[in-house]
Length: 265
Image: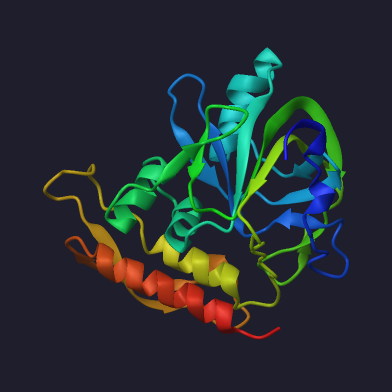
């Protein structure tokens, strides 16, 4: 769907929780952006609420990776920043997008998979997105423009963020597979998929060094302990330093994701 045909109302954005400030289309996804100077890629989970047929709104904090790009390099020039929202990607790309990675998340996802992520170029900009994602929303983040957003039921088990002006996304294109799947994170009282994903991503932090160094090792999360009624800030990990356990990481991640998918309403 391009141009005038790009209509967010054609996608079934749910009212995730009673009391949310609107219908949220992007809650289990990631947003792709690119630094205009270094060309570094960022994948990150930034929630997006539907405002109208061509507009989404959500928080982009200045200290986040995408916020540093947007507020530091686009807003001062009053230039819009291209973005692509990836909905229903493969599990490991989703984990990489939420992990505290010291390298670009597209590279990190390839390391977890043991092979490069297959990417394709967007229709309206030079960003690249996973080739097998279900839905891609392309457009621009608009500088010096805000629309009210929130509240939203968050990982703490409470509605967070007062309703106030936040960052605006203007949509230019929507592409999708035949009979696409829309993934949603229905966060509630912990422990749920938010804590599981964050717990696992924290277990993927890297020891000092760079990819390719002989001493570069993954820190393997051998135990994950999200306490009852806790939130992601309280999750406890037991980690062992082991050389190259990408296969184990992939297996554990798929197990966590499939377990979450089997849970009832």
